[in-house]
Length: 242
Length: 242
Image 1: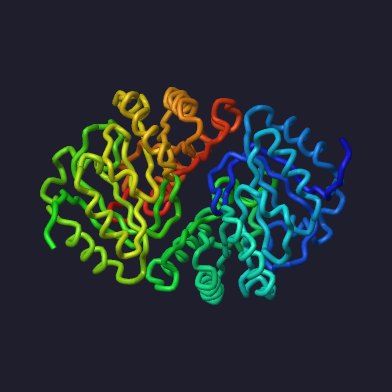
Image 2: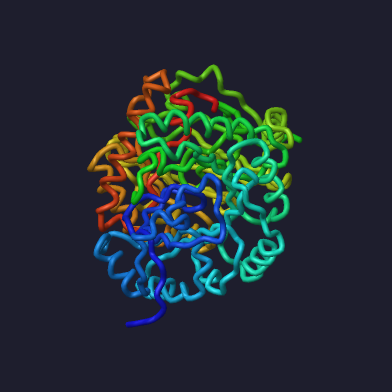
């Protein structure tokens, strides 16, 4: 089988999904390279800042599936595609269809800056617009249009905002109000990406998560929400490939 | 308004739901008293072992709603009912209907030993059959019948098994295979209920969660699963009322 090839940065698993609507799910990860954003606190900056360039491999859907199978064999039934921004890849639908044909579910995360028709075929799609602390500016027209298209076909999707401080939280409340019918997640941000010791990172992340809970609980504009940590960083710290 | 009265052990919130399919959800808690089980490691034994008897209040649906409102005001849109086993209370449907009439969603957890018609009206129902370490024996006929009734009306529900060791894990795999179409969660058990210091408890819970992940990842009978901690114990330890 030939078909389109994609820039792949990492393939790993099986592991536990650490974020959002699929938190806890046993899954394999496919991380694509390339992003239209450059968030100040991005935890996968190696996918777009040039530092991981040597690790990028051009792979088609069949190559990717074979390598996932080599890693996970018969032990998995779910794949998460993340980036970078995988929504930059118009032909990614080929991978989604191949995985579905093997009975494998597919989750995907993107910031919601670009639409792809294959969004309709994702089993759990997370749109994660970026708050002020990222340094990025949300394209509301693009996000409005993506949410409308997903809603129209009744797809299972959610919104997730990573929060580092109070202005991020007010941004999150605005997103939640704008798309009130969409399941909504706020996630405590990790701004200690340089910390190599999980034992030192954990108390800090716990404190940040407690801070977020304390802010959200009395917040009348954040009623229908989930408040979550980045679970994998609690377990493995900032280690890559888990 | 009058109506049926229920034995209520605790009312608290708003807080974060720490378990299963609703993990992270901003919610209020209603804990009912009384249980048909007596699990060896129950973290809410005060609901059934007599030690919390003095705290039990007989309240009707309106009383409960008013007290929840006093605690949470306009900040919440979700209530979790737990126990004990709330499925012992045939008239609990009155509370569910009252909450729904106020636009409030309702999650409920029960071991799946008894059916109630109001199960069909729960927004997120978790059935949590108890593994061998609990000392309880699963009534498979009862559980089969409950799963069949929920499936027939396409209700959103899940199965969750708390795991303390390898025989619990094999029990979990059996439950997952028996009800393969139902979203499935395994949860790392907490057998240090006597620990009063969250800072001492956390490293142990983390180790138990890592152990569970290490067991589930290569497990071919546990493919379509979520593996989660009891998130609230990581944040607040064994403290009650959070």
